[in-house]
Figure 1: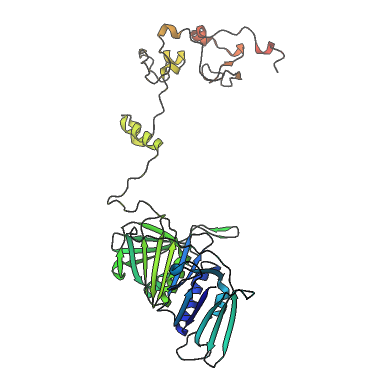
Figure 2: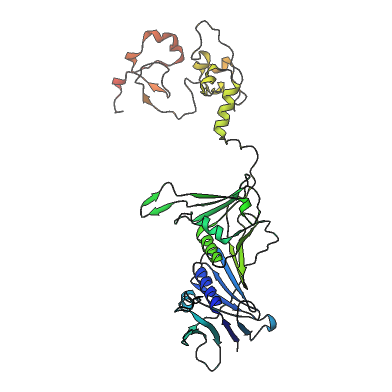
Length: 430
């Protein structure tokens, strides 16, 4: 049988109410771990990205405390879980009132009922009020195995500390619908807390320009500030607000410890026997420290190739930022174009074709080129109508009516076979 009895003062009971409100923003259930020297509330959110552990010291926080676990010896513990709303219905607000008005209590007595002869195991909470009225609450609990998140502060070289009251003033500027918080230390002696959201959707409407709020704080306003310049660490705005608001109720300083993005970040604060630790998942820019000189603009491979081609060539068109058309290899040009290239002068003597180093074919001689088929290329051979009626203007091989064949083309007649039949005499093709 487990023995667990403790008594809370009105001020301590009010602090329990505040920590339950904070844990309720992380999870619907709260886990309880009772040891001989401390009593701990823990919570883990549904996405397992935030873990909270609030420990109450047995000697400093409680008026009286007794815990004897059944197993584990001196290091034994008792664990269970309860609904956060169920505990909040008992630990209501205004449990502590310095003026002694209605609603305040004299003390809070908690006893664990874990006997074999009892039908149900319960937490029995008695609120002793000023007028002698005793309010008794019996809450059921569920046995569970409580796990803790491990965090090594020796690895966390980046850390800062600020009073929670000052931090509360800064978070009031954050937008109500912002989701992420980016914390970065600049090189100008300021730290920037920037809250933003990627998008806000309302039905089918999406806000194209999400709200971004940046708060710049001088590093001299911090109690301690030792962060790598340019390091971006991103956490949840909702979690950060919940932590700051709870730390402000204790009137204490908030401390942050972290190493690098994608590694956990831990917030720690506490006073009067209450120690609060929140371990959060982070993201951000892994390459933190920015270079002194601005980074060169990125350039695609196509743009870099075009720039180098335009710069290396002495073509006057380069001044107009125009890229000259690619030169077709000589081996892929038709024989007629190689013998009489387009754009050449009438009196210019034909120059021998220079071998193309990028060609996959062996360069042909002038005599061998005469045996090449007319207008040969790598395209698939098709048969189409030449509407332009100009020799050599079509891309694919064409056929024409012999009546339209001009006598002026007799000079080039040796390069083509004359038609042997009129198109009008061909039947059955259309």
